[in-house]
Amino acid sequence: AQSVTQLGSHVSVSEGALVLLRCNYSSSVPPYLFWYVQYPNQGLQLLLKYTTGATLVKGINGFEAEFKKSETSFHLTKPSAHMSDAAEYFCAVIRNRDDKIIFGKGTRLHILP
Amino acid sequence: KAGVTQTPRYLIKTRGQQVTLSCSPISGHRSVSWYQQTPGQGLQFLFEYFSETQRNKGNFPGRFSGRQFSNSRSEMNVSTLELGDSALYLCASSLDGAGDTQYFGPGTRLTVL
Image 1 (cartoon, chains in turn purple, yellow):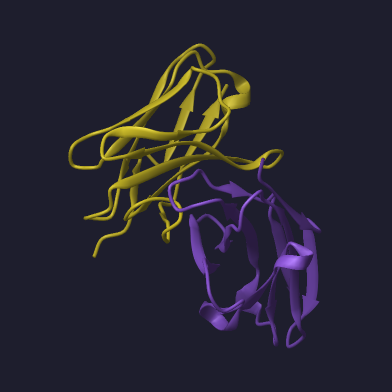
Image 2 (cartoon, chains in turn cyan, green):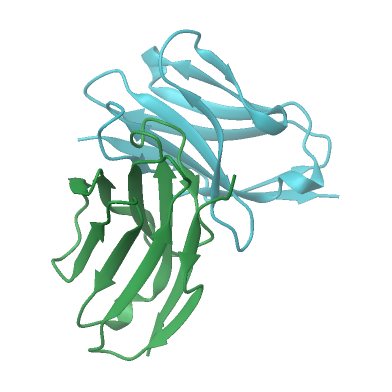
């Protein structure tokens, strides 16, 4: 069975500092991997996704993530945090495009001035 | 083009009642998925409809059901409401399934008293 583990339900970083949100997955087959963001009182929005090919994926708002098969990880990074990045971030996995998606519990990112 | 819309945005019901939530996907999208979001359990997959057929189903009791119409609009129904059904219910649409980019609606906040 697939699963997703996000390390840290809350992460705080200073404005301008590196953002690192951790995601580990388990899947019996090479998965599709996603990061979604949820701003307060809104639905989710796709940040980036990995399906095949290049393991470093660039997304919107300066975020990127690297698929590391040997570590079963898909950590999300951004070099310099902005106040507007404060939100909840969800990592998700799916075995193939027609399968059901499994979300992690989410990590709430706080940006300190 | 118009995004995913969900109606109503807020609902208050009492235990034992039933409720129907509606989701209008982005034009041209054939897949509609439903999720339940709670502080304790996070984001949990309910079911996915594709071309009027349920394609995937999460681990929820039979009180939770859904359907999709020929215009891709979808409804979900919860019968015999329980206090634990209080949650934000999110709908997402995509072209062909969760492997594509999913576009989320703002959600319906259901409170069961």
